[in-house]
Amino acid sequence: MAMFGLGGQEILLLVVLGVLLFGRKLPEVGRSLGKTAVEFRKGLKGLEDEVSESSSPRAAIEPEPVKAPQRVTPSTPKPTFDDAPTSPSVPPKV
Image (cartoon, rainbow, N blue to C red; front, side, top):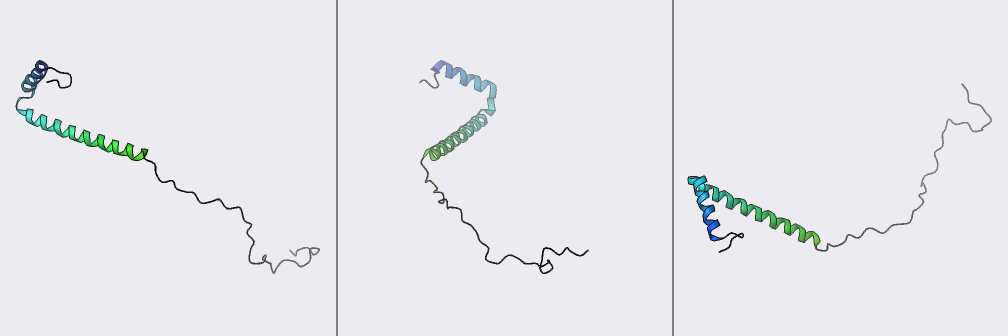
């Protein structure tokens, strides 16, 4: 009967100490320790699932192929300004 490396006498001593220290609240303490152990195991299971999920190979996302740069030509002609002088030799009027 070895539990956690403890013999029968050590376990009996711990039970006696538990009864002396906690008395009537011993069932409540045991219940809360049991809930804590269950939650701890759930947390460990969740971590194990995450680690095993992340270590499994995922489908690689293929990037789009790189296209060569293309020159963009405007479809409309360059804008013309009506108030611009027609000959460069005429100075603007002030």
